[in-house]
Image (cartoon, rainbow, N blue to C red; front, side, top):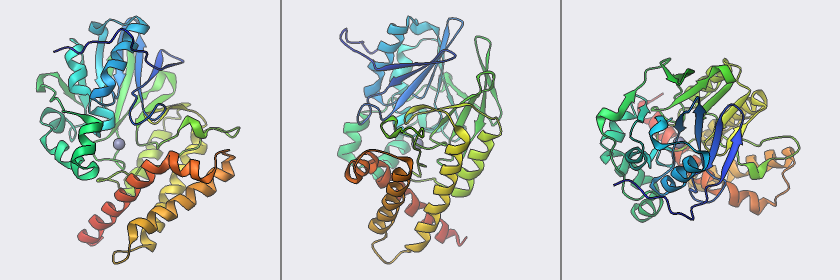
Length: 326
Ligand SMILES: [Zn+2]
């Protein structure tokens, strides 16, 4: 069944240079998650797609941009976290010529989402999972293109290089659009909500979501992306940021601080509350230095979901590290 686009559907679209468009996936709340559409010589690609509930917005965006569904060649899924890839199975049913581009570690989970569903239910709980993601539709194996580190995809003459970027997740890659000094880093280059922009520019925070966060890998992946000297990063949360070297420094110092915070709160106490509180203190200090106008309560509310997921991810990492004795 091909999803219908309701006539009244009004996608929130932001147009960027070089045929890049951000579409709000309407995940959690407006301004939280953006899928991107790349247009090149009459062809198009998606970079991340949101959830099943995002698909009508994406199709409405294609309509608004005058892109035929048959003109979409690729659905790039930077990693298989469900806020990025959950809607891909449903979306592909509407895009007759598109292939889903996946990391070798991610592809099996989109072809057979059983484990992915079980893992996500552990993080979100059964009831919330249903509300956030609905029923995951598998992607037929014949429509999956697996990319190794450094592989290239061509979109109507536009050269896109895929580089593996572990750290946020093992099944993560980033898309390097070298001719336009742009990278689509998925979640590897953190989270930057436009609501926290100030005269100093964007405010950014790392994302250490369970269950595969690894600080050393994440630091190395950020440095690898920097080696391409990108002018723009197009994040899922939320779209374009510039001033990349400053943001990279901030991310790297926060990742090191997260490791220190986790080290201060070992097993045997209420470490969840303690780690979350320390992370909030760090973010409030950084937000003040950045000149954010919101109150402490408003900032905590805006970053609350990330505080929770990051804390879970740090604890999962620490437990893994302790088990392996490293
Ligand atoms: Zn993610």
